[in-house]
Length: 254
Image 1: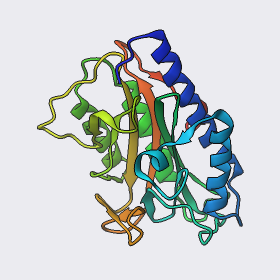
Image 2: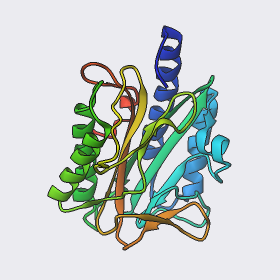
Image 3: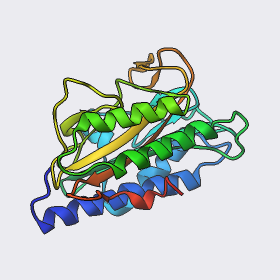
Image 4: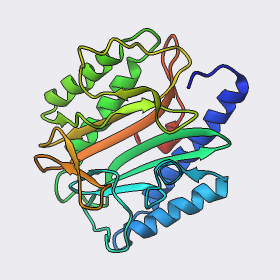
């Protein structure tokens, strides 16, 4: 989506605040002993209170209002009554939604309670890399250069990137141009970020794997070489200078 009016700016800003608030509240609500379905239902209530609709459910008939992935699950985890959260779990919540024809997307990984399994270095690397990547985005910058930055910083931190999960354009639908904002440099990708475009930038930083594969449920993704991954995501507007971060209220950097 390219912002072309104040009405469009207000629309995308509002839904971005909605998904950001929902993500923050879901993270605060998560506690040992509840199921991922309980957590998902809580997110659904928040979205409903704003009059927003779940984007994955609306766009893809996803069997949940939000995506909640735990431990070795990299993305698109299906909320379930059988998945009970435990102290020390690595949790990723991805919230995307639609309101009045505008769509926005954000996500974040965190450890529930005490970090028994030392996930913090992975999570912190993902946060820092996302921050550094977004800070370099402006009109005219090649999309592939941001992928190069993400991949190089992941390697320096001792991690890998998931190559088949990417950022994307967003605004009037959940996924739109520019599609596939990769976490590595694609030398054939000559596209550049455009002024006033709305994009979701997300990191997928992994311990062992480079690709994500679907599990038997057809949705949940896990790594091709095992291990785990952290994801952090903001929806932004590209400008001639520093981008405007629309989902900053999710507090994933705090």
